[in-house]
Length: 481
Image (cartoon, rainbow, N blue to C red; front, side, top):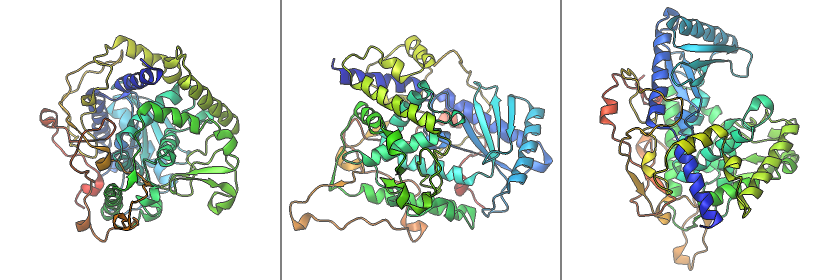
């Protein structure tokens, strides 16, 4: 077996372990439901709703990922954010309600953070939770990342691998001057935009505006407009066939990702990463990024010109750059004796050892059972027993995967030179839809053929699972106001 094939199989085995199982989804839904009941038990909190966001909603979380939740105290149906002092007071009330209800521990209120949060740990699988107030902008960022991740399934896989790799080398903790998970995700987006041929377009082609500026007016209408605009533009991009196709394997994309950012400490003094345009941009020529006060600039494409890597320190940036370079060298070396130690933490490695491998080829049916933007999730009555000693092999629902041919599915963004004038198509221009009737809330790809790297997923049929729920949980944009 070649070194490349061995690496590919190793990455698939890592994904088999770190991807959430059915019980991980169930546990997080139970946590959301418990928090909802705690909030409803206090008179002053009546009418508030519990809305998850972050990697759980964008479908980019691992088995051990945290859960981000926003307590919504909407002013009627309008977007009306609370001030910082009001959020601090409300978080205090939420904490008192949770203490009274029980089921939580390790409370830590951080009132003076940029966004005030309450950190707690659930008794269910020891899942850590970050609770905030009226965090609509982060909810929308999560939903848009979910839509983007559906363009190509290699993106989700690479994000999970990069997160595990970053934790292995202690470069995924903003408290200590390294990356937060959002900035790591944007690095993967940028890699997909700048590889050859490109897999993702500039994000301005998906949402041609600054999301944070458009969160105003009727909340339901605002959310629906943003999601439908993104879905419509993604479908348009996918409809164009005269583009080169990126056939890179997951291992090739991972190696090139590490190589691309191995000199990031040298570039960071002059260049910033902009996923909105899909390019490195000179910091001095971008007035929005001046004055230059950060060690690294990774612009938040949904909240321009905010820097998602503002916590990165100069000292840690140098170490992170060295980590990229060292890992890249290890993965291209013919001697890969330390491969697993480079890619995963000891705890993850122990799970890989104790859990039998069914096949060296990734089992596509081990995908998570559903997604919070698609399912009914409140009123849980049965609890799936947790297993803190490692992944189990429970009975999973049958999840059908449809595999698409490269020419049909992937959004390729490097134009192929046409043979003649008759083959030229007009250049794509991003437009905002005129109304809901012109778009669908979720984009759909065309009828599939076979290719291992492209896939869309039918919604899992979890009738038994769904029968356990009494109430519907879905994004606020789907609710009647």
